[in-house]
Length: 394
Ligand code: RFL
Image (cartoon, rainbow, N blue to C red):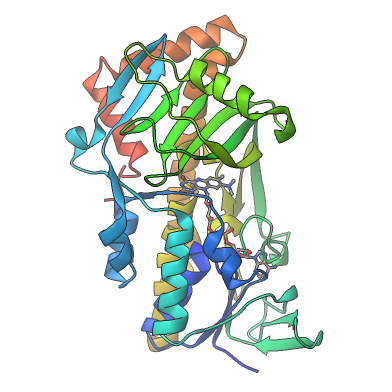
């Protein structure tokens, strides 16, 4: 079998690349280890930056989103027992869209497979990349129905298989380098069957540790609690979770949190990595396969989409008109935004976790940084720009 492009992984990155290729009449095959039902329900991110939504719209991929997504215009930092609202849309004219990742994935699968007639093979096993440093790469996998190995020959491989995928390891080690950063911090990621407790995102910066609150829908709210890395979710029974959230998100005059059943409870160890360059030969990585950003600044899905727009457009330009410019500049263009966002995540991590560091000096400088956001218009403008992903990118 032969397809011009094989896309490994049907997450936001892979599905966006595949949709762009289909729209340009370039055939491709998407390979995915999970089932369609599974990927359409996997909860994860929920915040999209405005430029990403505009780019989805330009590619005909945002109709449902624009109809259904909420808008975020304000966030609130809670520290020293007081809530400080930060109305970033008033400052910048820009906002975030709230659209849960499973809904976006559902839209992208439907558009690609059901509307644009693209093919996805779900449930594939043991995906292996071959000869990606030659002009005749191929991808093979074990077919779930027959148990036989099938080989797909192609011109290009888009490695979009996320943080646990196999594409990254097919890069030639002498030519690609992985830079890593470990925050030494864990977050207990929670999904509560409860309406949001505030009209905006809340960041609790507390000596007991960070706590976050983000609306997902009218009935579901995401919460985060800083915890030791590697902590066991079993250590966090319902009562303890809500008691900590109440303390860390406390603010004078704030209404009490609306509690509810916990639907998901996972400990995330905060770490980042960046693969440089993101391409070698005929293999191009996109999304979490190439770079992981801890969910501290909610940037991961946005970066995955940024890569996918560049890669989809670059592959389409090459396959339809022989234009090599996009592919040649792909890695460098992606990495500029990747490093910009990594730097912001690191900055924000200091703010979120500084008062719980146990170091009174660090706690003092953290609070100074926070207060500056509410006293210096220049500091506020700089923060808003990075929080929106707008710095130099709109
Ligand atoms: P994905 O979404 O992981 O998709 C990869 C796909 O590849 C499949 N796969 C394979 N397929 C074929 N062969 C193999 N060998 C394969 N191995 C894996 C997988 O089943 C999957 O379907 O990667 P992609 O497309 O790069 O998208 C990245 C985003 O999913 C990720 O960055 C975000 O979810 C990160 N993230 C957040 N990002 C935001 O922008 N805003 C947020 O608010 C936000 N919150 C979060 C998050 C990630 C979280 N987790 C997973 C730690 C909250 C959480 C809890």
